[in-house]
Amino acid sequence: MPSKDARWTREQLIATLDLYCRTPFGRLHRGNPDVVTLAKAMGRTPSAVAMKLVNFASFDPIQQERGIRGLSNAAQSDKDIWDEFRGDWATLAVVGATVKERLGVAVMPISDDNVRSKQGAVSEALRQTKVRLVQGFFRDAVLASYDFACSFCGLCLTEMLTASHIIPWRCDETRRADPRNGIALCAFHDRAFDRGLMTVRCDMTIWVSEGAKTKTVTPMQEVGLVRVDGQRIRMPGRFAPDPVALEYHNRHVFRQKGIHS
Image (tube, rainbow, N blue to C red; front, side, top):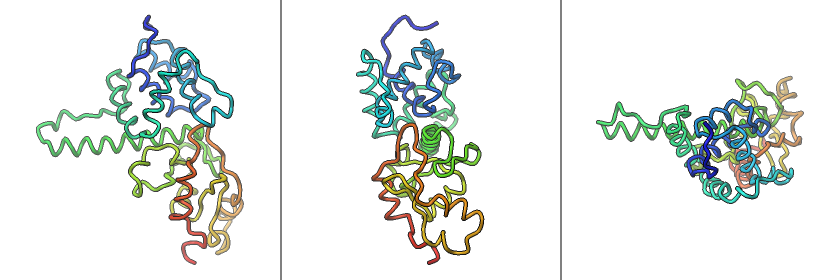
């Protein structure tokens, strides 16, 4: 039954923030099955969870520009949690999983009792689990932000989408889970972006390398590269690409003249 205690615990706020990050903006409502599941696990109503999700949405600059406002009588505690984790998304990925596991809604267990007798095995198992949790959180948060569509071409086949890191995974451990260091791309554009054939300027327009536009242009190149050059990306509903990350990609990953020039 829904809790009669109106006060939200820290764990409940963390679990709800985790859900917010993984849910497209258009699905932050009481009818969403994920909202219903979390509400039941916390002993709250789906409406209460949905309202808390909107509170978190109100802290994102994109939603602020759109006029989204949270509930004033509950916003401070929500903002405290938002401020705590917004610069440390990797911690949210792990802590959120811990909380959800206790609530009975975790997707992946975060401990392995079968290897506790071997400390080295435990450490490696936990490290690998944390990596998977971070990867899963990043993918869910980025794809949900772009409403499961490629930011360059609009392809909305989930099986063909990737949450691409702007600053590559190997280059900055602190940005691995940061949704603002991500962009949703289809498999074609993800490969081109990762290999430096494409980038995104800080004005959110696509920049394609000269080599990709001029060397033996095939129909696929024409549609996937030449035609999108200079176009504005499809902006996400939250977690807009970080200009600092884009500048890094422009300078250190993008190859303006092409790989084989």
